[in-house]
Image (cartoon, rainbow, N blue to C red; front, side):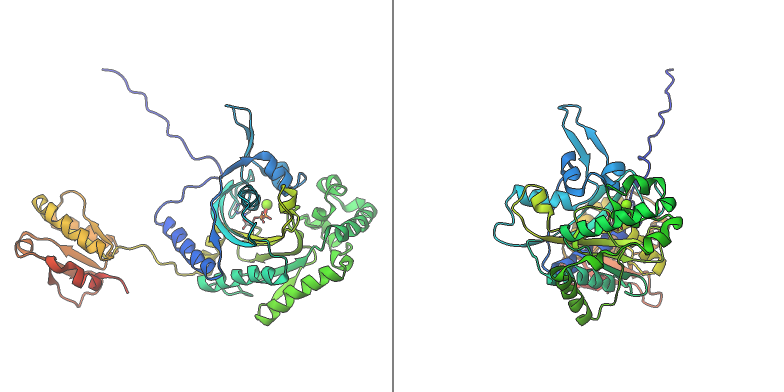
Length: 432
Ligand code: ATP
Ligand code: MG
């Protein structure tokens, strides 16, 4: 006898999760809700590769950002030495694709995507190494109307999902101005940071000359007061930037959307200008940003395209699902309408032909697999959550009929229906 060695099962990579039933039904429900909202605003789907040249993210996101510096999965393709990266965010890839396919030639585009993103972070609740985003990008539109639209689309989404803005999610808004305004502010800020060296942590000291704005985005409690009192970018904005900011605000005000202006909201990626925003919640601890975005008018040119403005957001699907759970939003389970019970295997060909008719008419009907006692089949039917059991007994089949047994409604008696005209009564089985 040969001895077989037990094979050690492999496990998923740390921080990368399997999404399995019944949880996957929550994802499908959420995605369907989102697609419906996106379509109402005229957004169209794009699907770009998960792997891109590393240079795309270095050029697009900025070299001294957390994402590029510490979190990006970058590697060398051992077949040809190409420098590649798993995408840490969605915007750079979409912009690359638009440039590559000259997609903005005939004007602006409103686009959305769903997909995995990858960042090497410390896994915890709401923070993973593979996570999913839904993102939108409105490319080629310069005005504040589109910034406001992108924000209002978010609000519509919250409402559709059963979240309440102001209670479950709050909008934080800021204006980053333009490069020259940020430069003037930056100089004042560096001067200020130099005067407060004593409270700066190591990371802040390292960043104060490369990315001083990010120093203000610190989570270090010892630096909060210093960050609070630092020179504010809003005070360095010129008339045009202020007009854009006010344009956005006027539309949001008219739409009755309340927001908090957060002068310290700078966002982690370098490509933003003018409007930046975050939808935040207090229900998820430190991982409180559910959706974040803003305007990135320089990015397309920076990636080699003909200059064109852009604005969009990225929304963390895992965080949103966690929030829906916290709030107690009722997400319907995916249950079949009916469960088919087949007493003997000889009936299967006839039964399965009948089920095909029902499915063609839109009925979700699960066939009990294999052979087992009626008792155990009824047990399975109950456990499936189906509203009806369809009992294909030999007597019924001989008469060309099926017995329909309501499972949820004890008071309703079993009745029979003719198989030949299944399309006519199939709708009786559909859930309300
Ligand atoms: P954070 O400050 O929480 O790290 P971020 O500024 O790095 O967020 P963005 O790059 O703006 O995040 O990404 C947009 C959204 O994607 C976030 O608001 C969040 O909902 C989600 N997200 C970002 N990183 C992760 C992650 N590692 N795991 C799960 N969701 C994430
Ligand atoms: Mg981050």
